[in-house]
Structure formats: C-alpha cells, structure tokens
Image (cartoon, rainbow over all chains, first blue to last red; front, side):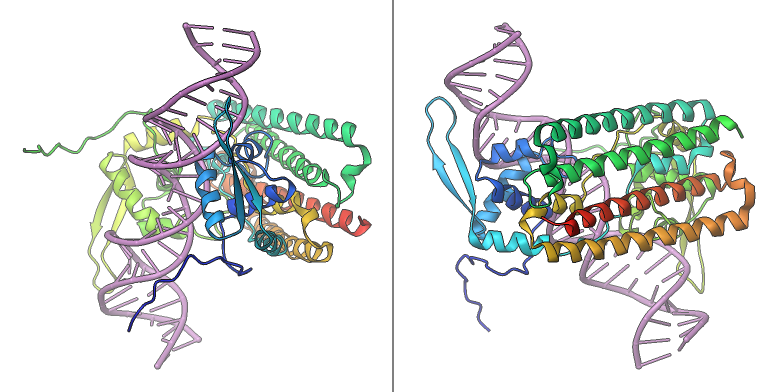
Length: 201
Length: 201
DNA sequence: CCATTCATGTAATCGGTTACATGATTCT
DNA sequence: AGAATCATGTAACCGATTACATGAATGG
C-alpha cells in the first residue's frame, strides 16, 4: 500500500477542532483585523476576565490558523517601529468561528486550590487558616470592586447600548456581570467559612 | 567521563515547591494511609468538586513524594488481587502540607469558554445562541441539583457535626456549599443572558 | 539612565489528558 | 460472553507558562 503526500490542506471543514485560543483569536479578528501584538494586548490581564494568553502562545497559533486558511496576513514594513503582520479573518475562518460559537461547550471542571485547602482545613491551625482566608477574601473583594468600576465606566460611556445583544458592548457587559456575580458569590462563601471558624471548634 | 550516583535526598525543607496535586495527595494521606488506586478514586468525578486527577498523574507524583521523603509505602503482596503499595505520610510530609495549607493561594484566573462565547455572541445567529445557552444552563442545573442532594445526604448522615471546622465532614460540607453557590450564580447569569436575547436585538 | 511601548519570534518546562499495557476476580 | 473492580505503571501529546532573544523610540 502506498501513501500519497498531500498538499497543504486549506481546510474549509466546519467540524475540525481548533484549540479554544484559536477560536478566541478568530473571534477577535472578526471585530477588527489586527496584529498578533494587538491580540496579545486584548488577551492580557485585566481586559480579559474570561480568557487570557501570552504572546508566546499567540504567535504560533496564528501561524497554524494561517496554514489552515482561516486567517491571512498582510506584511507591513515600518521604519520607526518593527515590521508587523496585520491578520484578517477569511470567509472559512468566519464559518468555523460561527460553528464553534453555536456549540455548547463542556461545563468546565472546577479546579480551585482554595477550596481544596478548605476541604483540608481541620489539619491547619485555626488562627493561621483564618488569616489565610482573610487574605484570600481581600483579593476577591479587590477584583469585585475592579469589575464593578469597569461596569460603571461602560454603562456611563455606552449607555443603554450595552443591553442589546447585537451591540458591540453587550459581550463586555455580560462578561463583567459574570465576573461580578462570581466574585461576589466567592466572597460570601469565604465569609461563611470564616464565620464558621470564628464560631469555633 | 564518570557520573557519581547521588544518594536520594531526603527533603525536609518546608519552603520547597510541590505541585498542588502533590499537596492534595499529602492531605488525603493525613486522613488515612491508602494506595494510589484509592487516592485516584478519591480524586475522581464526581466525588471531588474542587480537585481531580487521573491515576496516570497520581502514580508518578507519589514516586516523587516518596523520593522527597514526604511519604513512605509498605508493599503488600496479595494472592487474589494485584500486589499493592500502601502509602503513609511522614512527619516532614505533614509539616510540608500544613505549611502549604496556611499560605493563601493566588486567586485563579478564570478561563471559561462559555463566557468567551457570550463575549462574541453578536457574531452568532440569535436562535442558535439561545439554544446553545439553554443546553449549557441545563448542565449547570443538573450539577446544582447533584450538589444539593449530596449536601442533604451529608446533613442527614452526619447532623450538626458538619458545622464544626474541626470535624471530619466540615471540609466536604464547605466544598459542597461552594459548588452550590457557584452553580446557582452561574445559572442565574445564563438566564440573564437568555432573557437579554429574548428581549431582542 | 532605566523602564515602557511596539513587534516578533523560539525553547524549556510543567501540569494534565488520553491512550497503551497487563492480568486475575467477580458480577450481570 | 462481556463489563466492572482492583492495582500499577508508561508514552504521546497538548495547552499554557516562563524565560531567552532582538532592537529602535519614547517618556520619566
């Protein structure tokens, strides 16, 4: 039996599997053609409270998307800045991203170090456990405040547009609401655990 | 050139860094000496709503802990079952685990595919997005119900002991409360997004 | 003088998943 | 006859993080 060397396959198959990062990049490129650098800024703390990535992951992923024919780039020479590549999404990239958007993802399994520690709480000194929890609760409170501020900013700038699912700002609005709900609930739980500890053994 | 075989280093340094899984295993071994197999059952879905691992990760990790002197094992020969190794935590293992327990972990960065999809919602067909969300919400509702049932079981079996931080059941109680709060909040958010979609564009 | 921004990449390593591998016993 | 339980391991792979590498311009 003989195998034939296949040419690079321009993949228009909607059912192929990309990493989530790949789809995230496609999604950001629907909005705007941009460089890998700009994409890495978009996916950097704290703008992305739902997905993040380093440039060292983004550049190779863009190469992969390009080889699959899901994005294209234009090389721009610059004199005072390093040259750059502006990436565009292709029609098949758009189709692939939309197909992904319409599939319900698996419910992610939680892996949370603090919950693990609380599970093992009885093996720690109560005082040390309490101050550990206080520190952690503080971090959550700060994140919560950060999200609340961001939402207030967005509401002020964009007004009622943030409520329309077709608007450019709905996505950020929804993500911020998720972040606020998550942090608030987490904080309440931390306070519940601390109250149990203070009520005593 | 000749290499000299170094003796195995028994590490008593409290400040060394293990993976979270390593500490999880140590914590479970404080409770009870047990085999790698039993540990993998403990860290298997759905008993662990906060940390999980496969046996292929657990066996090598136990070797590492043993080489560091944090656990020991006893080889048990069996006739009707495969031979097994029963692991025990050592005094330095206990110290290392307690030191870890008392440190506040970094607040984990959320990486949630559904939130990413909702962020990009305007690029999907509204009908498809709605049914995707309905499916996802259903999965969260089921997990929520599962946790609620588990908590009811625990409460019934162990009574008021689950409220004492020093009790064996407090950890599971707290973890279940966290799971319930998390799923409930998530579900409410899904419903909010769906309501926005239904209210229209 | 030093840090930051723009801009792109590679290499090493780590944590985790999936699959491969073996093999007796017990339950359906 | 086939699946599940007990029991232990290895190997390949993938996604993500950290560090290495370069280099000009701008701002404090």
